Image 1: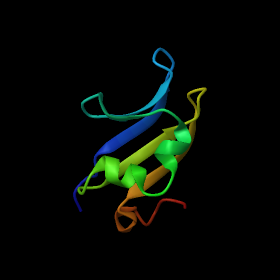
Image 2: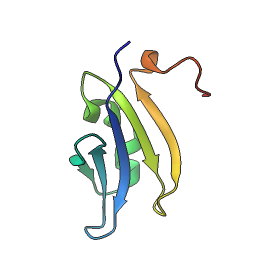
Image 3: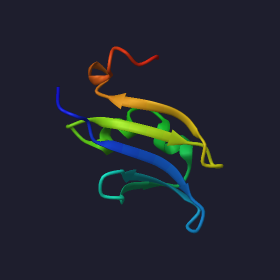
Length: 81
């Protein structure tokens, strides 16, 4: 199975917004005013694109809250959750 692209959703303190960054390129893929806007419905799934990916979601303090994999069928069987 091919490796999934990795993304991180983190708070940008300077611009007071939430940024979804591609970990490989460190480029912002999409921005959100509130964290709830990014995590609601299928917003992250559409933001990472049709190829899917793994998204690490951070809290405002920088600690990791959770990780989501899109599509869900690409989630490794050995990982909890």
